[in-house]
View 1: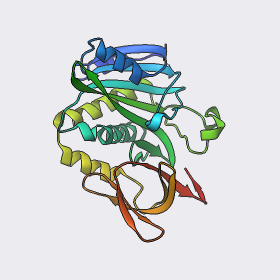
View 2: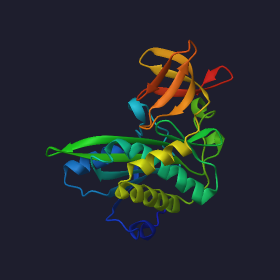
View 3: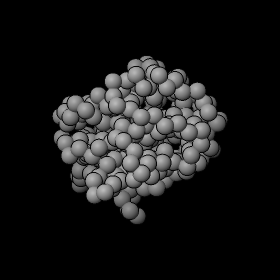
Length: 250
């Protein structure tokens, strides 16, 4: 088990319950099971390694040598739709604070440093006795040299240098302070300020359709406004967006 400073996390001013694992298939799946078995809100699961880490649309997520954690949350109506943006802002700010790197958000759930993805976020609902709860999963690449990443993601995957326990505590603190303050307007504004896609050339993929577009910005509700090559515009509330660089998307 990699060293985790439990005191650093458990002395945060929140009712956290900490669960640690050396290896698991998925910290999100662990907490969905735990929720059905009676786990309390604000249970935090941290693993050294995930065998089946996942991102959006059931994609695999590289889960070696980083920080992999999930947090069980109540599904509050006023913040439910903002949990992922809130988490992205929290990670970006925690990374900025600890590493001084210019961490930025790529719509909708990724955090980038130096043009490479260092963090993925996945929030999932779980129904427990008719009540909806949320499992928030966060994976951050830590202290990983470029050559350690699988070849197929080496050009897009990045890493940050930070102490694992300090980053875990900083992310949890940053997220829960936002989650419990219940200030949607402040969250949206912060997310827009940290986003870096405005003005970028991207490829938008929805099901089997891929179209090149220019990002115009984010709407008040954090939809991504794009203009396609034919001049039409759209506010995306879902879909995949890849950066288009040198004729390639990433």
